Length: 234
Length: 296
Image (cartoon, each protein chain N blue to C red):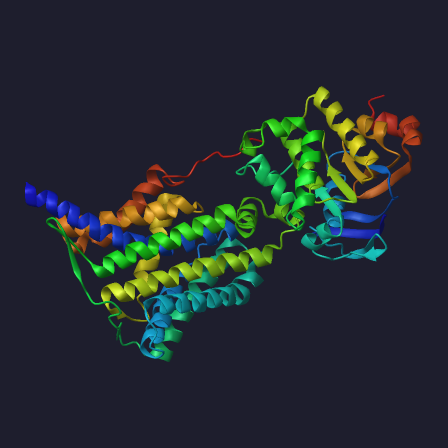
């Protein structure tokens, strides 16, 4: 579904991503793990079109989307939930969800998806008219994911969904990610919480200072000595 | 005592009509600031260009007030879009000071191009209304004041509707709050910015036509002072906040009218800029501004 081929990304003079290649097969959950500053978010931002790679190619659904602006990529069914949620804090929960469906004009379909999303996130239904800036961190994460689902993504990019959340909430969020994937959406998941990420992923890549150092099935990586020492606390 | 009270209400009427013109210009300032964080110092000149569009529409094309104001708003909207496209978009990622200086450059460019094109001589704006004076008890208001008030009110209601209830308005608010997140929703930022310039410029142009109607005289440098005053109004209400710009404009107009009426009209500019100093000292975020608005 998504193939990243040898991309190099720069922030000014800083070479942030040094020749990364990834493969996200249709229907799977692929995790990208690594410590702070390894380049995980930059990789996602490049895929979703917020940044441009200097060299390399990004293939999505058989189409070259390298350098296509972010707002056009969303229309192709590739949607990113940014790190730190980035909900529109000055708008209500409903308005946020409506913006998620910005590119769609099928009123009935939107209404149906809105219901489905509220079923998945019942807490958002309770708060649908609340200004989203007043939601808790976990609720904001749910809103950010729900908003992305409103665009009917085929591939969902999730950037640190567990960030700053209590363990119980992290579990809940990860269960929802599994559910979303079971519904047919492919997921590329970026996480510092390698334990949780590997527990739901099919496949994973380990990123270190802009390079991929390890890759394999989630089970392989979870049992690998290196990964356990560096990311799993033992 | 009675005459004092009467004068107070009279100045209130004058102030509100002047203030609604400031408000129309301030809205454009605040919307453009909200979306690209630029103090568009050329905005006062868009207002001047709007006045000229209105002038030519009435004198050359023989249009009445309403078609003239609509034509002027449409013309200014196009000018606004072109200015953003040519002067500001290439500077999108430049330091803030560079784009601010560009705005000052654009302002001079518009002023002196107009001097070249239409001559620096003031023009007499044709009387599009028969000047009727209405008496409300001891108070008087003329037809121009009523027209200004009603037009400004209609435009502000229309703007509020666009911003709060339409899809395009939601996209504008989204971009102004978080541009990257908006792009991830599929919102074309460049289009939203163009639309913001179009709306802001159209409102300023309406202000220009109304001032032409009110004072009967327009000239290529007429935008300088109202431009600055509208900037004060936008800051007073809280820059980037749309209801703030409306409120700031009206307050500023009323204060100026009161100072002119009770002290001396030579003090009115001092009062306007005194307000700017006070607000920056004591409430820099503006009357409706909050310093903290987001829970992370």
